[in-house]
Length: 427
Image (tube, rainbow, N blue to C red):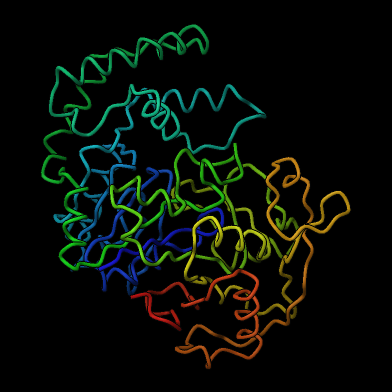
């Protein structure tokens, strides 16, 4: 059975958690392949609301095996706290699998992240301060700590000492901070080993065997396409690859085994943190989208910046990820507007540009070119089929589909698990 990739097609916060959870009842494995606890998914099941950060959304589906792949960076304290919280609410977390090759977010990674961002002042990137970037930097610099290192204290100590040789120089001499002792770090990390051990395994082997056994595997991105370290709005990006290619490197499953790539699109656009955002609104419409859509970061708690739908970004996401389908979320939030602007192109230095400019400077100065689409006032939250949507809502969806370059196969018409219109099956 081919594998599926599900990822954000904007700047994240598109509703991936709901989409993954909906598919979770039909798939055997759900895999997080990148990011850390800087990502957040809100999943509503009945009258219960769950905020997930490190755990794959599939953990809420009883028949599904949730997997944290090698491309993820793990803060053990956050992971154990999240597992404990779910257990207290009656969720079975015993099937979780964790790659032994995933990297650990150490206490010094968190410290470096916070002091560096503070030191940058006005030039700060807008990180979550959770040590994600420094951990990926350690991984690339080959001084990272992996989950498997927790089970060899001698190796762990050597690696922590090597990492702190440089970091303590930076902390004490550049940032005027106290040095961190290797003994303190090792003691804390070893303390997590026993609690994590039941979950740790060779997930690359498990996932490939699952596919050979005709199981359905869903790969879940943590952030959106425009936050990709290579293909996003650099440097205002995350430190990993949430695009479709990252699913392969972050899980150890080859690209020939992936048959569908599903992009999650919000019916408007949001982003958290600094960086360019052509359709951002600073007026009453922006405030209304934020209020009606409940646009506050699950992980950060920060208000999301809100703007109208950007078809240029959607086309870019289709191209970069090779998207086969879209899942359009939060269509209900747009109910009540007489007319809804959609960005169909940019104006840059007086010229119309219909594709995302490769130059960050050009993108920063891009002004949206809008096309006005008629709105609707009817409540759509109870619609169970596309034909039950108001005509103008149908036209809005069809217009976005044509502009974005891939079919819209499902539509979210409310926050609940069952408030979704399925047009084409993903499986």
